[in-house]
Length: 259
Image 1 (cartoon, rainbow, N blue to C red):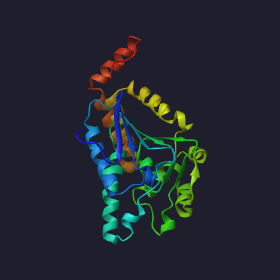
Image 2: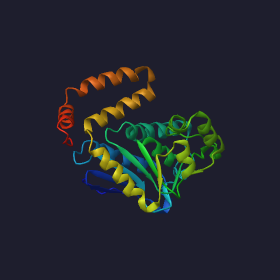
Image 3: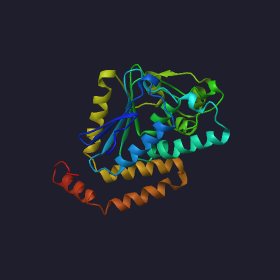
Image 4: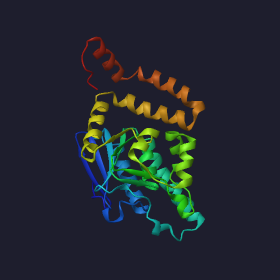
């Protein structure tokens, strides 16, 4: 990258980009500048051939992202609030959700409000044993605005999602695991190493097939009537790729594929 990020630590190592929100004095809270910078980072990483996956986390052990910076939108009009929601969803949350490379959220502490929405936009979530998650927006007289009302029900079901949203209360990591909000719960020390091991498994598979799988799964969730057709098309298209030829050859020759 040409310029060092202001609100993030960014490191690329062993095909993985480590994006760390770096606002410890604000518990890594989101504001428009933080979201803008994250959008710029994602745009660059999408076309970086040295990057095959992303681990997104927050600096320190207190918070992944403890929410939005409330002071910033305290005096927003409804029009300004809608633009905030629109830009945050389209430029960051939807970008993460549809990112063609695997994105893992390493939830190392509080993931509240916009922070939980950020984690839910990632493909896979792993949490430390100390992590706490919630959508407390109704306590401020508002509702989640970065896709939380849509993505939480997909992960935990309508009833539990409404319970979390309407009470605004936090749940711990084990409850999040039980309800399907996170994929794994590990110790703080093992959080990043576990993410790395998971990505290493993914890197052994076809990068093109993984990108197609992400796209097709998302299509089925967002537009169910198109999901099966999208799958058939992507399945057929895969037969024309070099990855398919290599994968089949490796299988028949009883060796590991070289994707």
